[in-house]
Length: 425
Length: 118
Image (tube, rainbow over all chains, first blue to last red):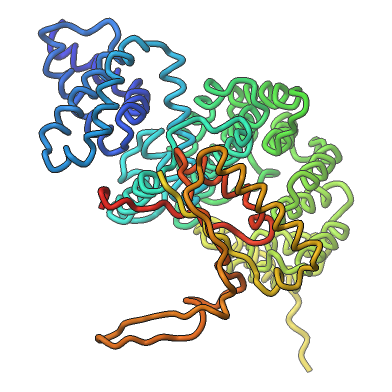
C-alpha cells in the first residue's frame, strides 16, 4: 500500500476509533491527560510504522497497546513524576498483557460506557458534564466545545482542566455505576445528552437558532448509548424524541433565519427517515414494562405532530392527555406551559389563558419569555389586543435569541395597526 | 482514598427533637458506625459540641484575632464527622448517604489530600 493510501486508512481509523482508543487508554492509565497524549503518540507511531510494516489486522488493539507503551515510556522519562506514581506504573504494566487479549468489542464498548458515566458524574457541575462529554466522548475540539458554549477557547480549556482535576482529586471512578444507583446515573447521562441536543436545537443566546453540529453529536451519543445499554426505555425514548425534533429542523427557521411556528411549518421539508425511525423507537420505549420514560412521552407527543398532515388535523385531545401524563411524571412550569398551548387547540384560548394565569400566579416563570409570548397569542385570539401587545412586549424584553426577538417584534408591529389608542383621561 | 464526611445539621432543630426521637437517632448512629467499622471503611469519627462553643482564629498582619462562633453563620452547622477509607467517590458518597444525619441536614464529602500527592 502506498504511503498515501495508508495515511487515508489511518485517517479513517482515527475518525471511527479515536473515541474507543481513548476510552480504553483512560481505563488503563487512569488519567485523562496521559491517555490523550498516549493516543496522539499512538497515531503518530501508526503514521510512521504502518507504511513499511503494513496495517495491523486489529488496528484498534495495536493503537491501544502502542499508546500504553508510549505512556509508560513517558512516565519513565519523567523522573520527577516517577517516584510520585511508581505504584500506579506497576499497575499499568500489570495490565499490559491483558489488554491485547481483550480485543473484544464488548470490552471496548464497556470502556466507552465507563467514560460516559465518568464525564456525566453528578459530582461535576452540569456545564462541566456537557463540556467533558463533548470533548472526551464525542471528540470535539476544545475550540468547538467553546463555540457551543459561546465562550472563548481559553475559558473552555480552563473549565475542562478544572473538571478533570475534580475527577482526579475527588476520586470520581472510571466505572459503570453500582446497580443500586445505575438508574439515577443513567438519568444524569440522558439529561446531559438532551442538554447537548437542546443547546444545539435552540442555542440559548446569540444569532443562530440551530447549531446543527450539536444536534448531530447528541443523536450520535443517543445511538451509542442505545448500543451500550440496549432496550432501555429512557435511552430509546430520548433517541426517539431527538430524532423527531431533528426531523423538523429544516422547517423551523425560514431562509431569512426567522422563527417558523409549528403550525406554519412546511411539512414536506420534514425528514421522513428520521420520523419513521423515531416513531418505531417511541413504540419500543413505551412497550417496555415497568419503565415510563418522560422522554418517550415527549417523543409520543412529537410523534403525533409528525404524523399529522397539518395543524388542524393534529390529534390535539391526545396531545393534551399526554401532557397530563407528563405533568404527573414531571411537574415543571415548561410542561405546564406546553400543556396550556395544547389545551388552547382543544378548549380554546380562554381556558388556556386561565391555565397560564394560574401558572404565573405561582410566580415560578415570570422571567420566561415563552410564557409571555403564549399569553400574547391567547389574548390576541380573544381580541384583547392591548393586553396582547403588552404581553408580547414583556416577552421581547426577556428573550435573548435574535430570531425570537425578531419574531416577537413582528407580532407587536402586526398589532400596532389594529390596536385602539390607549384611552386617555 | 480517604474521605472526610462532614455532617451538617440544624442544631436548633436537633435540640428541639424530643427524647424519643433523639434516642432513636443515637441508635441509628450506633448501628451505622458499627456497620462502617465492620465493612473496613472506618478511620475515625467524632461528634462536635454545638457551634456556641466554637471559636474562630484569624491571623492578619501578624496579629491573632479570635472571634466567637463558627467560620460562617449558616442555617446548618458542622456537627460531626467520619473519616473513612473508600475506593472512590461513589463508595464514599454511598457511605455518606447512609449517615443518619443525611436525612435531616447534609453531608459534605471531602477527599483527604495526602502529603505525597502535593
